[in-house]
Length: 227
Image (cartoon, rainbow, N blue to C red; front, side, top):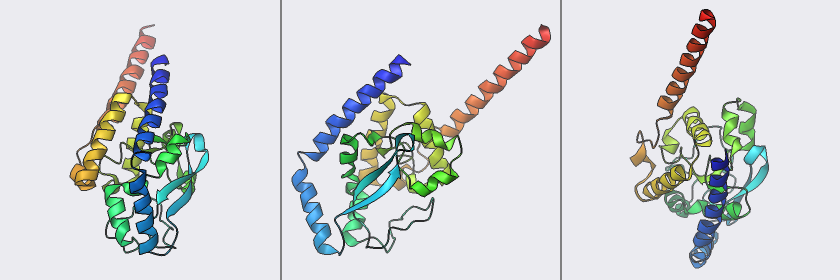
């Protein structure tokens, strides 16, 4: 328990240092991106939307706008694909390079998000959460996460939830570093490169847990019967 607490403190320190490194030295680049967005399509520079964070606390997530005004309505569990005609020309590049997520380092600095964690969903999704899925809200949402480096848009919604819950239950700084390194690969080569190339096999892990629980119950029954 103490080890997990220390790792969370380290995680927060890591979040702040890396976020400042992303934000400050590259500020001229982010300003250039903002100018291009504003001059190439009508609408605001940033896209703001309320999302549930740690323990369902609502916050506003920041992104560079990549879609045409009025395109924000989404269907639950449906990702915006690369050929979606609602995406602006510059938006396609921003989404492919993940630069559209850069403003979220402000959320990280504010303590609303982390570099790594389950991606924040829309508030409307909460009504369909089971107790198991709700576990993904036990850690700060992240800029990137286990699901995002395991196929992301090519995964079903339920599979993304499995990766999120696995991450929350098995968090470590070692896993965070692996996810960040894999994220670099996703940016360079695309999400499709990592379809079926998981960092962890969540289904195998769930089966192992189930088998362990069955064995424990069986042993307890044997002990009771012998008694």
